[in-house]
Image 1 (spheres, one colour):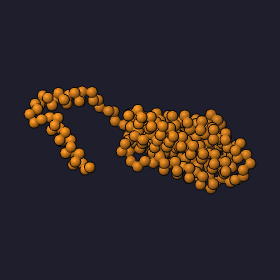
Image 2 (cartoon, rainbow, N blue to C red):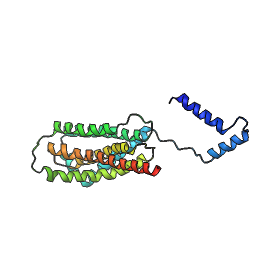
Image 3 (tube, one colour):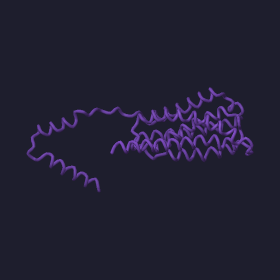
Image 4 (cartoon, rainbow, N blue to C red):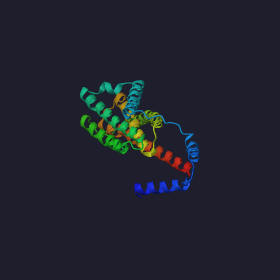
Length: 236
């Protein structure tokens, strides 16, 4: 169906609803009945304002949780390691924040949530493999599970805050928005771990720290999918 076809259908419907001999008063009464309850909608803030808001939540919660648990990790990092890890975190967080903002607008542009998650889960193992050594497995699970739990304890509440910001817009697909918000929340947990965790084994950081981002992204997708299903069933 083409736009001209839609225009023709609407014109025909209008002709049936308002015959040629209908008076202006009848049309005005119908318009009044349709328009009386309409209220202007407050426009959304600019995209960059929401992007900064998401980044502020990411930075504030990562720093606050890392400080609360103890800044042991950043104290054992070299200047070169710090200069590589944290700018990479900021770039990944910016991409995830932009993905969140685009989900808030129906015509917000190319959806980037899955891209942000894949780049984070693929990029950080590469970064960590370049700057850390030791791939020994002793203590792999016993040292790793506490980091995964701590990271998720930060990312889950962060994801809730992200959801509150997302609700300020008009999210059409919560599963995609959940991936974007979950990725950004997971990066918050990862940021906390880089500030807090003093374990610099490559195998530990590559697997357990990055697992926080992957788990958060998948959890965000699952919660968003449930929200979409609930909304569809409620609309029936």
